Picture 1 (tube, rainbow, N blue to C red):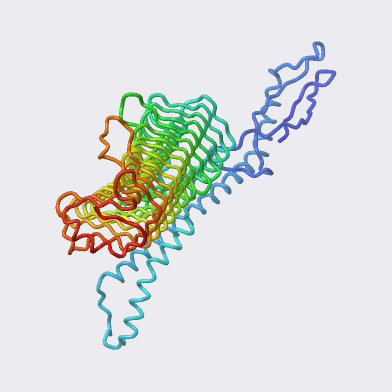
Picture 2 (picture 1 turned 45 degrees about the vertical axis):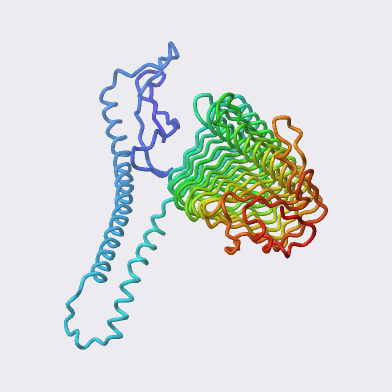
Length: 574
């Protein structure tokens, strides 16, 4: 765009015109004008005062101004109006096309629906064959989904992804993440959270809320010394209505703590298709719960609350030197879901807690199922269940497969403590217990079976374990319920029942059953064959008092002897 400046010539009698370039002004609102479009500007007419050599606003020569204004208006107005009309026409055309397409789609969808679901009166219907009618009905059924797919493909709703990426958060409050749409996701990538805190609520570094099919990913991220006064020292997670969270194996949690639940992570997962995935290589180190004077201290590394058909998948996670005063030094799981939960390849090393120093589990729901596969417990210490404590209720099923427990210790159940009741089935298969110790009962396993519970130990080995009673295994069964205890192809070797030197205990309360201590409350019916020890092999076990390898304490013990005749190795029935 050019503008015109004019002034009087030197003799002051004649106008002098000069053409100068000027930038275009802002585009018209609502209409985009192309770069080569004609635009107009406010035109200011000035002249130069030759004596003062300064521009002055022209006040004379009104006739000349009027003539020039008419010329400029004629030159500019017509092209601008034409261009404006052209742009508006194009925009209206596009809008009309979209509106027409929507109208056509709705009409076709209504027609297809009516054709499918409403009966039609067809003229000359008697001349239409059955095959033609069938084909017509089939085609009508295909019209509706095809129309919907076509419409969605043209008017596709784009997904939204938000990020926290390549960032460091040091000594700051918690960050909130909310994902509530099935097309949306949030990614935390390559971040560091250090000394983060949340003194008034949960989640020291992150507070995550995922629902309605939304997804969140935490990738290659580090959490160091993050704290909270309630739940989730580093992360508080709430997943429901089909939400999903994945924490990959490049993440780590170090020195994080919570006053109540979940020193590293607290997660509540509920609802169909809601899921939490903890992937290979994820590490929790020196995480803890710490609330002096209360019992709300579960899950030093991780606390998981699983509800209403939600699920977890945990693969090769490591909990090292984690602790909790109450339960689950490494991990605490409360499972009230119908889904089968799986933990695979997880390591618990040097963890401490009251119940389940490594892992503490409660199964509540009818038909709930939990599988622990290839777990390793090393050097964990607790009061009840040095490596693992499990309470099962209401017809639940539990499988412990291929696990190893070494150098774990507690008062009862140096390796594992089990509470099996109410028609629950617990199976331990291909597990190894080595050098585990229980101060009172059960160096390798302590099990209390009641109300129709069933324990099967299959293809396991117990080496060098010791306890006050039942150096390898201590089992107490409450009859007359249909409780069952079965041992298949299992070796107990080099285990000891030691006389407890605690002065508060009488001598007769310890030193029984170097390999296995089996006790029954109330009468057992031998004909029921609910106790079967034929697969037991016991060698080189010792007891300070009685039952070098096996001690049985129940009524009708003579009749029970017939069920023990095929035990391999050394044994005594007392």
